[in-house]
Length: 180
Image (tube, rainbow, N blue to C red; front, side, top):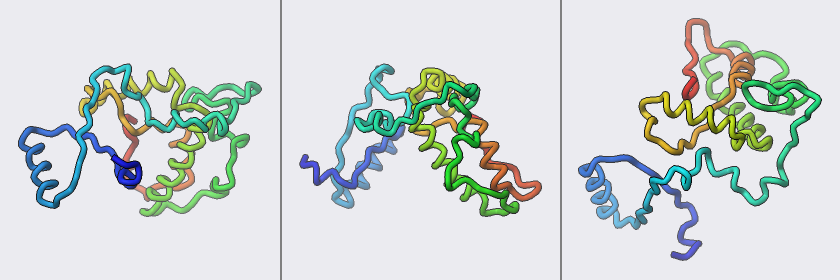
C-alpha cells in the first residue's frame, strides 16, 4: 500500500472469540471498509516491553542527563527525583488547588507531562523499570499473558506530588493507577 493511504490509520490488537471475530469481519464488510490483518509474534524477545517512543532516531537529541551530584529516587530512578525543585518546570503548580471533582482531569494532564519528562530521561527504557513493569503485569490477572502493555507505571513520587496539587473532595477515593 502507498504510505499516503496509511496516514490516519492505527493498529488495534484485540483478543476475541471466533464469533466476535466473524462479527468484526461482517461489520467491516457491511461498511466496505478495508483492513489488513497483522500477525502477532509469540516470541517475547521480538515484542516491545514498553511503548515504542524509545525507538526514535532523534531520541539522543532530547536526552536529559542525570545529575550524579544527587541521590537517585527509588521510585522514578532519576537523579535528582523528577519531582525535585531542580527539575521544576514552568507548568508546575505554585499553589495547591481546592479539592474539586474536576481535579482528576487536571491531574491527567500533569501525568502526561511527567511521562514526557521521564521519557527524556530514558526512564522507560531502564532495565530496572522494565523489570518492575514485567512484575506488575504478572501480578495483574487480566494482563498475565501479555508480553507488552502500552501504559507505563507512573512513579509513586509523581502520583503523590500531582495529587497534592489537585486533591479529591473529602470521602472521594482516588481511582488509582494501573498496578498501584
